[in-house]
Length: 139
Image 1 (cartoon, rainbow, N blue to C red):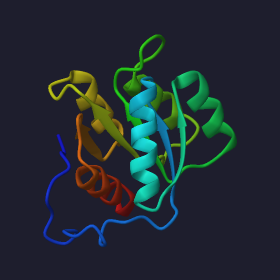
Image 2: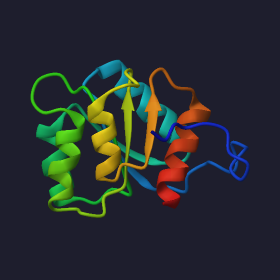
Image 3: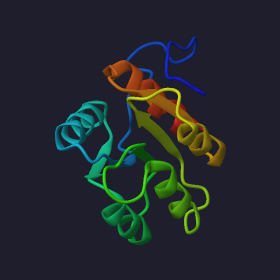
Image 4: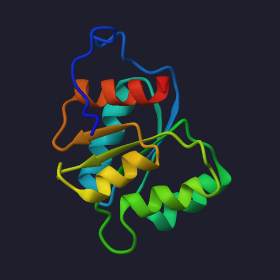
């Protein structure tokens, strides 16, 4: 699994800042949703954050996001991998990163196989998140 970490090319915070790219965060825990949103805004991204699939799917049916950042465990309803799989049916090129407190999940592996390009383990630092987002956006 790809894990955000130090990179020879993107090694300073200035290298990994955003340029207003639009990111949709799907995180069921309110405090973590706010924290991730604030971190990404500080990095120069435009952010919309929702609590689950029931908000994320209709949002992406009507809007585009440069990147989808989703938690693997979304409480009630479908998990992050199932959400990503559903989104890929109407946005087949949707870039994504997986965020989870668990690192040895079969579902994380499946999400990466579907096309999510990065895995970020909670808790993460600003630099870890910044690097994962930049790598995902660069494709």
